[in-house]
Amino acid sequence: MKHSVGSFHPPKTILCLSLLWLVQLFLEPGKAIAQALPTPSGLAVGDPVPDVSLTNIHNASFTEASLSDYKGKLLLLDFWATWCAPCVKSLHKLDSLQQQFGEDLVVLPVTDEPLSKVAPFWQKRGWRLPTVTSDTVLRRLFPHQAIPHQVWIRDGRVLAITGGEYATAGNIRAALAGTGFQFKTKQEVRLEKDKPLFVNGNGGPGEQLLYQSALSSRLPADIGGTSRRKDRILAYNVALPDLYFEAFSEVFRFHDQHNRLLLEVSDSIRQRIVWEGSPTLTGDYATDAPFLNWMDENMYCYSLVLPQEQPRETLNAIMLEDLNRLFSQYLGIRGSLQRRKVDCLVLVRTSRKDFLASKGGSEQRSVDAQKFELLNKPFRHLVSALQYENKLQPLPIVDETGYTGNIDIRLPQPLSDLDQVREALQDYGLDLRPARRKLDMLVISEVEQKFHSK
Picture 1 (cartoon, one colour):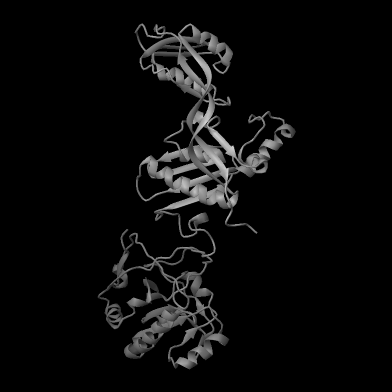
Picture 2 (cartoon, one colour):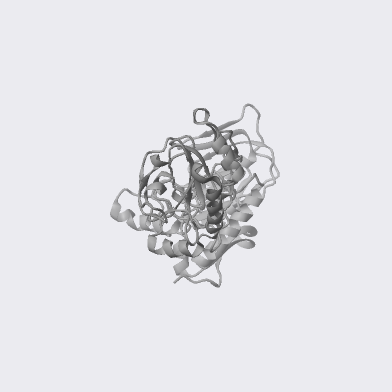
């Protein structure tokens, strides 16, 4: 990102180049401190300044003034506070500069702190400058967070908005002469330190975001799913197992999310992880209410943003680490990929004779209420269809045929009627047989909680 660069010029030829820039603030006790802003915007370089009245002026022969009183002079507003160490250092310098330039320059410090706090602080340091106390007017015109915050005004127009580093004799001399000097415009953004960054615009819209991961409860909307790019993952309104399956998406396919899951948890935790009833809404609120309530309490959103594109395995590893760290604290569980011996249905060939080989022609897939038909399609399309249509069955389907060619096959619908499908497969020298095999499984298990919520 680029820095904003401005220059002082005579009022009729003011030039302001506003470019994006990146600022890092290191906030330490007793140094620059950021506060919440009442408003996010104010006057900018080049804007005319309204003739507002100033009150509560301390250490001067008068207590009230107007900005128009300083017409023809270079007015330097310096926003400060008693607790700000850089401000105190800057005020020492400004007090000397005021004496150096005399009546051509008016340095006017401004604070929102009351006179009772400012007066002894001012007297102790022996500054000859006046200062506005209990200010509310100027801060609204020039909202800011980091201080010192300095506004340069001449002939009723904003010439510069800078940090304290630009208040030098050379720059003041150039401003008075109208020859101009370069400066970096001091940028402001609303930042509340007790709230998450970039949430509800805290810190801006998030254009500078380099890395972020977040987990939240369900959004109040009837949507759900996952979205991926090479530098980010977004899962919204999904159950906890779906988050973990997404973190292992290079291993599992979308039809694995029911029968490739092992829960090694107590009944109470199990109820938080899976809904045991029907996942279909009926339209009758009394009937649907338990499921609706479960979704509100046990569905989540997850977001991951990385600074650059990464392989899927890298994204997934970071997501898994996030999920295990967060859910180990929140629910006392973690997910892992384990090779386990489980019950399954194995698709096998029952004959050496090939009853599947395609007779050729164009590739076709025809599906309706009565039939499922593949013509000259790869065998894996049959396997995928069987796995998808039986994704809610407790036993995963595993292909052990070794068949790789294109096939012609016609099966009755629905493919989820396994007895009917098995009978039809016999004509093609195939069968689905119960067996136990070692498969990659998502295992969600309980862990000892090291952190406990109050």
